Every structure is written in structure tokens, then in C-alpha cells.
Length: 565
Figure (tube, rainbow, N blue to C red):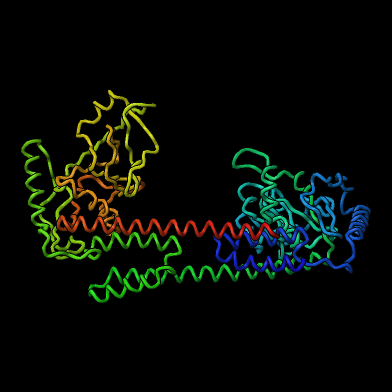
């Protein structure tokens, strides 16, 4: 490895630390450089590979003569077209089947202990240490793949192969073992390769991605064919260089491990500090303490909000503070919420008299049911705030075009997404929509699958409503934006879950939903709360965009540096 490559590799450690998946890509780069002969310098004093190949042929003939192996089937030489890159001087392209035995069998006494290794005990990714269960050889010698200490095993079936499940077997009882049939085994019978050098080759994502396109079989049961594994072109360096490469890989992978631990620790610290600051905001009552918590977040804003997890928690805290009456100041000049409740009651009574509106919600709310009661706020059960329009029974048959059908899949957390587009016929619409018609400004709420999504209707065309979606037609329609944010807050989502039923699919019945107590601020305060939430959510959107842009930039920088090697 020349000095320029060393310098660039050093750059990778700093760049990879900041980039998403950077350390993962760095590990991949280390293995790629290793297999290209660029990780350690070549030593002109190393015995050439040509001598190693002669020794291999001599050992093959000896083992054939001694009856240990059959005469190996000759393999075609590696063609220029099969060589993915040029090798350093002293290296040679060979086929795996030339330099070792593929999928050999063991011979031992049935009463001897051996290691049994099912697929779950094979390590994945860059891990190397396998486990085993002790079994008698006679119990496992039939129907399983054989291996021995020093053999290299590689999973051949999807998705285990793609997950780099592979290892060098070591420490087996009596140095032998058997296990899952979904392994290819390489036995280093001619001492041609350092087993861990071959293992690093097999774990290299470049090797894995190329082999995937050569797998055979049906979906979910694709395998790397034995002929492909046997005839795999393999870059063979001198043995002494293989040892140096493995040692260098160990050194660099240890640095990657340390970087991962440092990165995880820093991430955990950011999340913990942020969670603590947010918890102060949510728990403290004194105004001066509240201001100190806000000041802490402001002072450390750029450091705390560099990860999406913290932005997600900030969104939750904004909604929770709003519903606790801590997001905007109360104004003693606001008309009291009790006046709003009188207006709601008057409208409800009119609807009962003129439109035969039915309501089953209790009037009385005990203080034990309160989520908290900021100054000037009142409580009212949801069933007394709105007409419930919901549909039960079998949803009408869907057609390719017609009246749009809004289902629980369309109602998201705070908005309506028209995808997937579904329709029912005009005739079905007339017979189905008998309980009322949703209109712009109403709320849509999902009762299950998923529970608790809510959005304000912004669809101007006619549409039908499917099961598991309730339309809340508020007696005071301008409360919809506030109620939307209220239902998105953590305390209200927790209350929904507490009132939910069901074993397999958690849902809430409309009768229970109507009884949920709703905190009601004065109307002007509702407007201030919604405006403040909108402002802060826009800030969160900006933060998410900045994090995404920084992530892309870091990834591009890492890719550019990697491309120079």
C-alpha cells in the first residue's frame, strides 16, 4: 500500500465517522483494498505464488497416492474476462476448487463427541465467532453438512448468504462437526490459504452482490450453486502476505469497532440530554424554571437537533406542552371557555330538536378524569362536541372508478393521503351513505388499524367513508385544527389506548370515544395554540430537511473519498 492510499484511508476514518452508514462502508472498503493487494505493501522477499502452486500440486498427488482423496477433477484456468481487476505482482487468480476441497466428508467413530452447528449459531456480517452444541458423531454424521477445525463455512441460501453468515470453524470437540445443510465448506487440505483471509473474501459485499445474481432456485429458496462456489475466481497472494493482510484487517476493523462505540455513545448522550431537557419542560410548573429549560434547548439547539430522533421527540413535546397550556400564554381578556361550552350546548340542543341528533355522552366530568386544567380551560366529552358519522357492516364493493372511498389507510397522522385511490359506484354511494355526509373542515378519525390517526377534511369533491373511520362534525367547526393537534398529542393518544379493546387489532368503539373528556381552552387561545404549533412544526420540518441535506452531503463526501482509492 503506497503512502497516498494510506493517507486516503486515514481520511476515511474521519469522514466515515460523520456519514450515515459510513463505518459500514469503511469496513467494505478495507476488505476491497485487502483483496486488491492495496492494504499492505508487497515484499519482494516473499516466496512467489508459483512455488505455492507447485507445493499444492505435490500435496494433491501425495494425498491421491495415500488414498485420502480422489483424483481432483481439473478446472479450467481463470480467463481474462473473469478477472474483475488486475492483481499485484506475485498474486495469481485461481479457482477455489483448485486450492482446497469443497464440501468434504468426515470419518470418525460414532462414540466421539463432535460440534453441531445449526444456522442460528453461524455468525453474520463481520462477526467471526461461531457457537456449537456437543453431540455424538453417530447422531449427526448423516443428513448434515460436515466440517472440521480450520474449514471455512459459508451460508449458501437466501437471505443468510446476503447477510454474510460465514466463519472459520474452530474449537470443535475432537476438531470435527456437522450442521445445517445450507452451507458450502472449503477445506484447506493443501495449506494454500490462510483461512481467515478466505473468510474476509467471502464476507466482502462485492463478492456477495456478484454471487447473488448467480443464485438459482425459487424466490425465498435461492442458493449459491456448488459449481459456482467451486469455480469461483479467487485472488491468491503469497502465504506470508496473506498473514500480513489479515493482521492489518484486524487492526483496521478494531478501529471501526471503536468508532462505532464512540458514535453510539455520542448519539446516546444527545438523546439522553435532549430527553432530560424536554422532560423538564413538561414536568416543571414554575415559570422561571420553565424559562431556564427553554433557554437550555435554545443554547444547545444546533448540537441537539442534528439527529432525526430528537426532532421527532421535539414534535411530541410541542404538542404535549400545547395541551398542558404551556405553549402560549393565557390572556385574562379572552372570553372564558365556559361561554364557548354554552354556545356548543345551544347548537347541540338545536340539532337534537331540528335534526333528531342523538347523543349518549355523559354531561358530568370528575376532576379525576382531567388531563390537567390550565387557567380558563374547561372540559367537555367528545360526544357532546360533535355529531358522529360512522358506518358499520360490510363496505360496498370497490370499482375502478366512481365515487372516491376514504378508508383508514388514507387517514394519516395529521393529514389525508389519497393513496391508495379506491372507489365505489354511484348506486352503492346512495345506499351506503345514509348516516350523513362529511364536509370540508370536519375531522376524520381512525378507530383501528391504525388507532388514533386524525385529519381535517380538505377534500372538496363528494366521497364515501369506509369502516373504521369516524367523521366528527363539530358543533363549533373552527375548533377542528385545535382538536386535531389535541388528538395527536401523547396524553390523548395514551387515553385512546387506555379505552381501546381487542386482542388482535386494538381499536376503540364509538361509545367509548364519545365519553373521552376533552380540554377546551378559550377560542382565542385555541387560535394562538394552533398558530404556534404550525410555526414550530414548520421549524421541525426545516430541521428534518437540514438533517437530510447534511446526511446527503456527508454520504457524497464519503463516496468521493472512497472513489479516490
